[in-house]
Image (tube, rainbow, N blue to C red):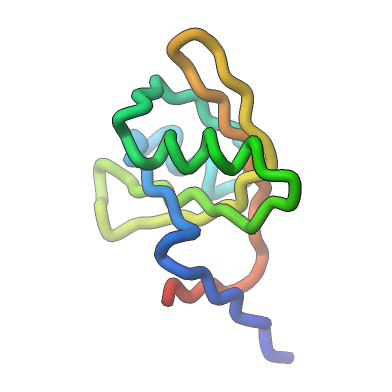
Length: 102
């Protein structure tokens, strides 16, 4: 049985580096949200802020890169965002498909 490949456009992908421990928890499905300090001068957060306001949301994805091994990457789909004073909580769901970034 062939697994379906999910094709993700580069502009749908927001990349964050994570320490090895957090990265491994995400990859194993033990985490479903990430808390990040945000800066509206950072295009990733501008994209998230705009995405939250859209009535009909396009798919948006997070790519976590393992700081300990930059070749190790994990992609999850953004499902919600909560804003605090200087923090952004990004909730995501895990994807079971094969993923290809185009």
